[in-house]
Length: 346
Image 1: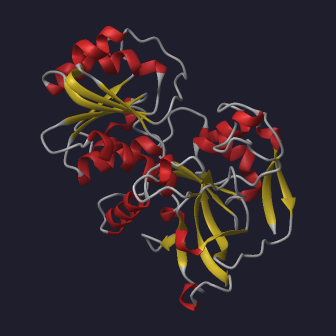
Image 2 (image 1 turned 180 degrees about the vertical axis):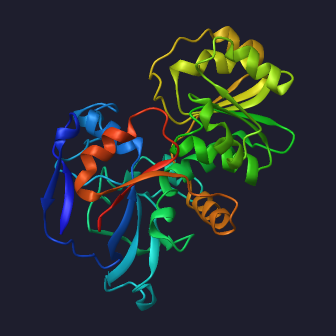
């Protein structure tokens, strides 16, 4: 089969298209013919060493073992079964739950042995992938590409919104609102949980699209008076922030939060380190949440909301598998709207 290897830490030249054997499913696994695989920050930061290198990289203490096939937002058709897998799985169109874990229900994502597909296991930048049958779910939409726009980004966004317990009558500010996670944060917070959403983007030309996704107000982080604009738009301080930007908007976020407000972060594309005056936290009674991925139950609830049409796929562009370097390069450019998807069949 054709696949893409990450050969080590570095730039996109560490991505190589290779020919390798089609993997064999273990007794509890299925072989999936990959139809689409979304791109995430996760595999780019893994390649770049942004999580650390050597034993600090990846999700496990031993670090990422190269070469590795990246990719975790996977949809495809089950074409072969392990001996313990029910016959009814054959031919199913599935979306992959992206990690294994021995954690109890509701705590799978924080278990010490949590291991991620595309990091600890070979992932979806390939024509075929093997994965445990019980971690393969029915596709929420009939289209492979559209269904690949959700799993990691969607579960991350869903878990963030559940953590802050967004509800009708509250205002949630979403940073990086045009990105993969951000565009889903906007939809989930507004259309599933009923909150008002202030979407922060770079280019206000995206305002119409953001409002279609459910944003009440759309503001640009390039404004010299962003804090004032947020407070004016909301008529006062906001209830919560869903953040994927990090340093660049951290100070602004704390400034506009109400007393008792909540700040939830799952990314740091705008800076991984920041300065914090602890007095801001305790004098305003602010709660900070760190958030990565989510639980199987949250994943199922997300898939149900997608099937019900409450959450729409937002796709910027697709690339054939052989253009993984170009796709990851484009992914890092500012101003995109939604997901970048790799298509193994071109």
